[in-house]
Image 1 (cartoon, rainbow, N blue to C red):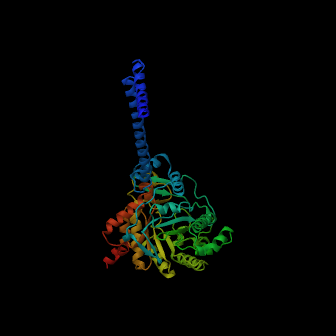
Image 2 (image 1 turned 90 degrees about the horizontal axis):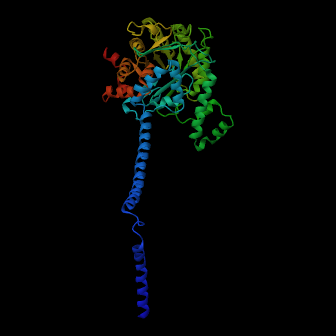
Image 3 (image 1 turned 90 degrees about the vertical axis):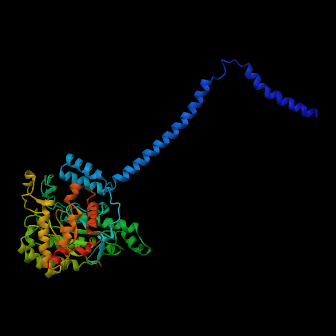
Length: 470
């Protein structure tokens, strides 16, 4: 008991010491209420700042991601209403064209984030692709931006024209805007890096795809690829998809001829089929560019029929298992008699399709921009639409719908595309409209088509006007 009492007295004494000490400390030395408030407030402020900084930082990151998502969506208004006018204001047309190609090549361009509506599906040449809107030849001349263009939502991308040998084309300036008309005049003159460079790009693209998506049964082929032993035929025949490298899209190669070649020669086209045919889902023979002297003469009945027979024979001789369909691209300036001759040659040779049309050498009186309208070259844009539709209707009538036709010329909206389809086009292409509407034009046209179809299918309205007039 004595020991327990002793312990309790010691604890009480210990507890009393701090109180006694505090009582002996002068008041002036003790922390004032203000100091204690400041310390507490500072601690609370630091905690609050951290919360605020976290919220701000998170907001900036999220906002940045949302901004990037918006900017990389091809439907974003910023492309049409900010970037396109800015490029027109700061760059000449050819420079803007090159910048666009570089952006697509580098993966810096927007993409179409929506799935294509099932009503847009197209079945042609024993192929099925997701939509009928294609990028026409002339934009990606050298096969630099194929995947970027597919990412914009095009169901069909046509590269070229590609000539056998490199050639610089015509002197600059050679491309002119007519902004009031939303038209373009170009006299590029088949500027091309040539078959060798384009073939190398197409081949490397397929190699990268095969290495990335290799299966066990492709190991031997991959070993040969690494050692440079694989032939072109074995390379492309190991693809389990289209040459576009997308199951629901098609890649076309447009073939041109060198300026130095004789006007009546078809050798350049035959060489093009042999060299680039294995890499294409579709081949196109361009006999309608207005910027190569003598080229359009190949559209005459006898010459065109001979040309088509030779290139079809070359296509059939390809060693690769897939033989790409072969199309011919014609001008919108042909007379009714000439269009009948083209149709007869196409039927006689069993060519796989006709693209209607290329640029026009005419200058419709409806053009507002009279100054640039006087420039030499091919005119493209909305004013070409009536010319292309006239030619399309004539050819569809002559061929009786037996040959697939591709409509091209002045297509800017979904209603434009539907008008071409009703006139007989199995699919459509555009180019100039992207220079004014921006990279979202493919999606906008597709949305317009779906709206205009009103539940019907694209394939059901092809040639509807001709059928209803009977």
